[in-house]
Image (cartoon, rainbow over all chains, first blue to last red; front, top):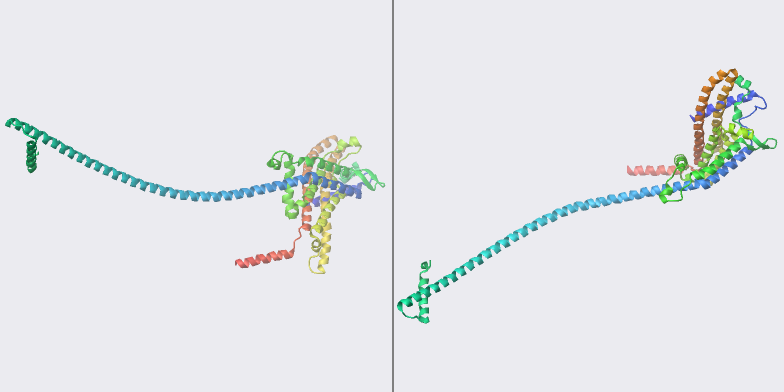
Length: 197
Length: 293
């Protein structure tokens, strides 16, 4: 396309040059290739100044800015990449830890449940044992109390019997007699256990 | 049509060729001409405005300084495009060494091209007696000088960076064929420079000549009759507007082409391919392939 464009342009230039040649008059006699070496020197000087000045005051700072920005972006991307890799590694580590934590938690719960069952069983056993001991003690106390009451009853009964017998016989029993009678009565009572009730 | 031109005494080249203001040696040495003035104007505009347009803010933190603002975006996007997509593929590791020259060439040619599109003649003619206008890049001496600058960049940097290898790469093939190839390479180098200069010159001239011819139709039609002149002026104005827009596009395009080709030619000189290196790399790849197999 560029070649076509240049070719068409060249053809147009040739036509224009033909017109120029056809005019012939001195005042209109101009050529497209007019100029001399001094225009070339002027161009060289002007362009040289442009390259030097722009290179120092425009392109230099801009190129440094572009390079600085490129480095900044590259470093940021590399840093982001490193951070991402570290984050992924840490995530994997935490996922593993979390998985282990689930297992540990299950084990802890199982152990606690087991221990709780043991404690419950122990408490039940202790309570049962205490209850049994309390019942036995109560029974023992009841037996003692009954024996004591029976002893008291026998004493009172014998005392009354002696008083009644003394009054009947009009005779005052001595303590020795009294004791003798009691012993005799107890022996008889022991011989006849069914008579207690 | 040519007869009409001749009758009207109109020459479409008058608005394209350079006008000499001061000369020495009976007009043989130009001291000051329209094209030199337009180049000076372009240089002044670039030197005054470009550093301001790309100024990096001093205040703020590092991120503030790295963030482009306002007009800096416009210039930077052009410069970055030229650096990353035009210079870097051709110049490789030498990109940042040559990119200031590449940017200067592009913006200098672009400014000259665009200034040539401005209708300065009606403004300057009443003041100076003759209009100060014209496309400096429509002058063979100007484009030729710019092309020679690129040629110097090619040769000087080719020698500076590659030394004898640069000279050696002209002599490809067995003796005595390499002598002929070296001759052709040198001719090619000159032809490249010549094409670079001629392409820019032709493309910048033709649009202006075409516009001058189009506008001249109005004068010719008006000579026939007022009504005819009015009728002809409507398509001429529309056509001229369209061609001016095309010229604006061509101004950017030709600046880009000159820059792009300069990059390609400089790249060919400074980034020389070494056949033995390719052979080595091919051998290594082949050995790797065999090892894998």
